Length: 297
Length: 218
Image (cartoon, rainbow over all chains, first blue to last red; front, side, top):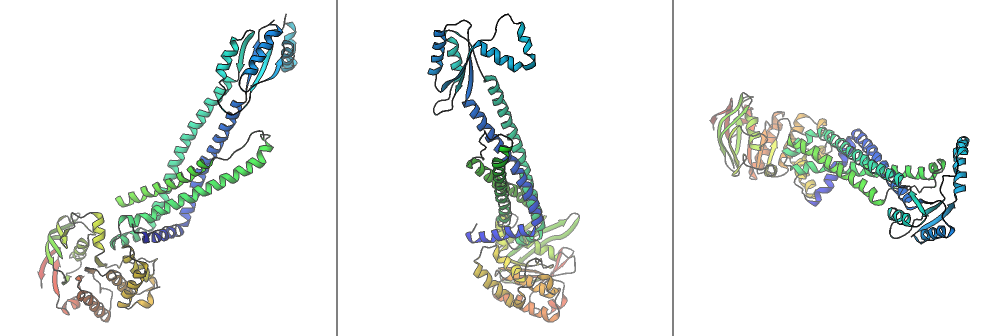
């Protein structure tokens, strides 16, 4: 296509949008809402991922000791823990302390413990693994090593909970993928219909253009530009709204909900760019399908 | 220039054209005449490639329209001017824009489009109405805009379907002078008309159609 035709195509596309304003505003609004749903989902996913990552890094571990071990053995276990990368002993919980804490945790039911012939609770070290640079802490390996140390009864960490959460994240990602796919199809359908309506409103003009020797592409390109413009506008609008909502929530609501302990981050630039590109691509593909169908007739 | 071989065109059970064989030489001026429903419009639309024949062949400058690609047909149409009986003007575009449309599709420079559109409007005497919209014009004026659009691209072939149907005798004469001047420039002109006055006043080749058949040539 000749370069000098592009200003004509752009004029035509903008003219189409202006003369079918209502159809375009409705299409645009629906596209923005769809992209916003998708964007919000991405925003939540990104933050959930970050939070889980954070919890994963500051892992806590309980190292339970055998009853009746000597002080030397206990010190030996403590120095073994300290030698582990990023490990820090948060506190030592003696058998007596464990029972006291358990008693207070039971509250009004604490009387149940009165009948016990001896204290069944083991002493333990509470260990935390701090976040840091370099290789990730392999908790499974540490657990195995610790359990081999003389005087260690059992090692427990939030493994089960973490695994459950990771499965949940996998599920959320899958749901996101399905919702994203459905929304993409919806957006495609919206663009197709918007362009189809503008094509029908210009049916007479297209017929005349063809009669005076316009090629198919000469007629198609303005409609495809129209779809692309709709894609750009809805992508930009959705991102602006999403960012505004993010700013509002991150400064106001997080404190209100007492969740300020977590960093609430916006979607990375690559994701934002992907939403925009996806929106433009959907606009282009939707209009391409719409004009293709029209010319087949 | 235009050759038709055993051309048939049916619309359902109705036969619009029945075994038409015709040869129009380059630079010829031909009238196709006949009563309403004789097949004049269908014949012109087939030559223009706006309709496909049921059977038979149409050759324009040696190119068989049955075997031409969609793109080549589009490009061929740029060399053929067509004045439609119902004008086919766009009501939302001005007179100038309607005429310029025929050049815009070719990707000409805007300055050239402006120049040639004005020339064409001057030729049909409507340059002062270039900013008017078709619905603001009389039937005759709309007819002349349709002619201006057909001639603006200096066509090799000019096809006109009842081009004087909406004009008074004076304007009819003016328009015929215009067609003859385009013909003098080298264009092949084919005019479909049922106007007896038009045929009586001319020395050009006349083809008579009735019920889809050619039954006379003069």
